[in-house]
Image (cartoon, rainbow, N blue to C red; front, side, top):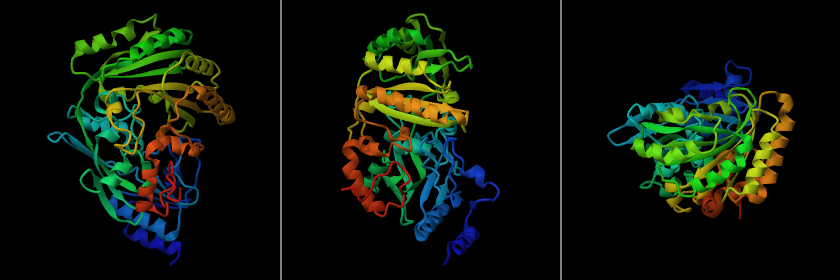
Length: 454
């Protein structure tokens, strides 16, 4: 049977949409968040439920098509889209169900962070869910899930209770600590290497209002501000999440700034004020935007840095410490930034997330420290070469100050050589499990775990 015949047969029973080049909706469906990615699948299967996913996986396997899997479509590497293969599009699968009595929530893979936050907030609950509302919840979770709440409640993977997957064979399994525990271990940090997740079940926590936001300073104050921050961050309570950012003012003025952003998720407002006060009282801030707000609003604070359709190229790595020299490199980099959407964000890692064994989940990076996200984004396509070069040059200058670790969710398309850093001590076990669940590497458009690796 030819591919054309197979597709025709699939269309008769498929609940979602099957789109080919030139058909209405195809161009919209193939686009993802990063405008730099411009790929053309031979076919897009826009699924509505698990049965559709099974049919799509079977089609791709039987016809020998390269498969990509799209959830929220936010990942900068663009691996959600295949060139000339089959794109399994889960973005229409947006069901969310919250069970406040059990303190659990179930979400389908097309759900974005902002949608999940809003659904759980109705019940005064939350799950660690990243820091940007447009992020796809599926990709965030499968890669680990750094989040404002991770000091108190761990990462997204630490709150995953179970997941339904479609394997390369087309078989549907539920993975949890009780059923398929090896597979459950692997998907908590191993990305999309092991199957297509069609449902996530999360633990939720009582979180309603947080004390959060940035305190902004002129870029010239960066050396003093970071000296203060190193001391402040050395002994933080679990309730506080912090970031340092080197960025342009969001008002379009082009003003270069350095900021400390906080999110305090503690229950006692007086304690929260006291814990955050040193940040607010240090130096002479250009603006203090810290305020009490609903948790979902906290995850929108830097959305403006990630406009949909902008061209984006990222670099990322962990620091064990924020040295004066590293701060100097980052300050100089922002001074030279070719676009006002270029920024450097440093996420603090401490608390509950660091009290998990590196081998307890496939996500291994549990050491206290800091994770750098080097963002190069731009609107004018004529700036592409300049902006990519800025990111690469800045990363090279920072490399002597970096730890030998990287976060899969922040890696760009050309960072495949850093898979060893990303999976660390868990790579050998991940390779063994990849051989068991996807020995032919059907799911390879990801930060790939090659089953033939020796």
